[in-house]
Image (cartoon, rainbow, N blue to C red; front, side, top):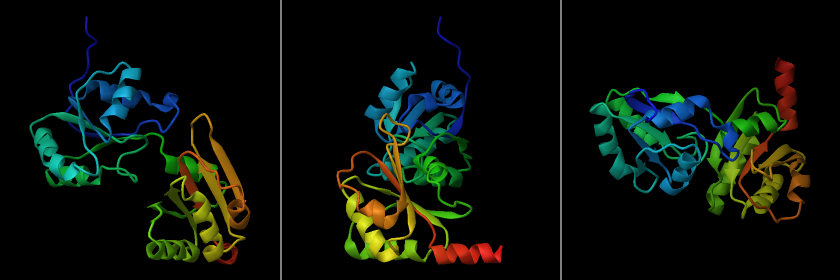
Length: 239
């Protein structure tokens, strides 16, 4: 006899594990088992996840290269009473992942998304960095082009709080060296690598020391850069 599932309607933004599958929440499992359709950034990746948890629902791709074509049809299904779960490859939809466009169009159509929270590389890094996070900014992925990257790093240099951003393993070494030059070699920072995965690693210290580490990085990275010491002291004085 098939397992009974509740009848849902609406849009569900479902966070999924960034590495360790034990981070999947009970609520996320219940929703994914009950919806009519899962809109996924990568259907192959999501199919593996669903199969692991013995979930069998239709999948449809919705990623940055096709979402402008897909969103209209997905919103139409929502207006007709269907239930759709939106998932990214890992973590929380819309957080440096596809999702904003669907959420925005759903809101315009009168559909209020339901957020199913869970782990994300950002929240993991904020907690694990050891940097002051009473206020911080998140800048998604570092730009590749030199001009934009320079402005990106100047924004980090001038920010009075801590900054977090994602970086490719192929550019981590170069980025750290450039940050040390622009933001200051003594600026406290943290490298969060492969969060929740088997080879999880967190390195903390001044940017100059981190930049001098062997440039053979592998995996997925979040870099945190703390406030400049003089600005941090000013904030403490004000408090």
